[in-house]
Length: 252
Ligand code: FPP
Image 1 (cartoon, rainbow, N blue to C red):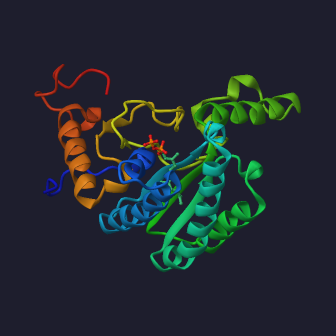
Image 2: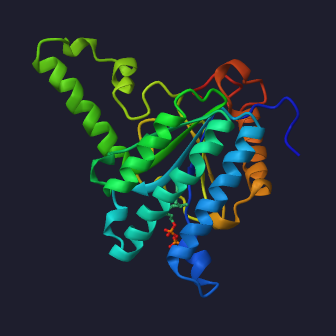
C-alpha cells in the first residue's frame, strides 16, 4: 500500500531495460520483447494517470541505440510508429499530452510523421504530460541547448552574464517540464545511460531486477513506496525533520 497522503513524484522518469532478456529467456525474438515492452508501457501510463502523476518520461530509443543490429533498429522504429498510431486516440481520450523529446530528424519518415501526429493530436492534454525520448541523449540535449544559446550571444541578443539555469533549461528538450524526482530503471542495472543528465541532478534513483515487460502496477507501487520512504527521510529542506541524518539542515 502507498502511504496515504505521502508524497508522490511530480515527474517519474523510466529507463525501460530488459526487453531483450525477457524475450530470449522465452525463446522469442528481441523484437517480440520490445513489442511486449510497448504493451507494458500502455499499462504503466494508465496506472500513472490513475495515480494522478502529472509527468512521466520514458526512454524509448537513445542516441546510442543506432549501434544495435539494423533488424532490431527497424523493429523498434516500426513499433514506435505503430504505438503512435494506436495510442493517439486513447491518449487524447485520457487527456494525456504526449511530447516527444530528442532529435526526430534521423528517424524514418513514417516514424517521425506518426510521432509528430501523436504530439499534435494530444497537444491539449491536461491530466498528464508523457515525454517519450526518441533518439535522445542527455549529452546531446545539453550540447544543443549550449549551441542555441551561443547563437543568441553571437547575434548580440544575449549577454553571457544573463545565462542562468532558468534560461538554460528553457533550451533543453524538456523545456518547462519539472525535473524528474524519481528515476526508475528496470533490468537490474544502476546506470543513467545518458537519460536526462541535466534534469536528473536531484532525482531519487530506483533500480529493480524486474525486466521491463514484467514491471507491472504492483512493481510501480513498490518503487513509489520506496520513494515515499526516502522522501520522508531525505526530502526537501521544508519537510526535513530532526530525524534526517544531519538534523534536517544540510543539502537535499
Ligand atoms: C532496452 O531493453 C529497451 C530499449 C532499447 C527500447 C525500449 C523500447 C520499448 C519499451 C518499446 C518501444 C517504445 C515505445 C514508445 C513504443 P534491451 O533491449 O536493452 O534489453 P536487454 O538489456 O535485456 O537486452
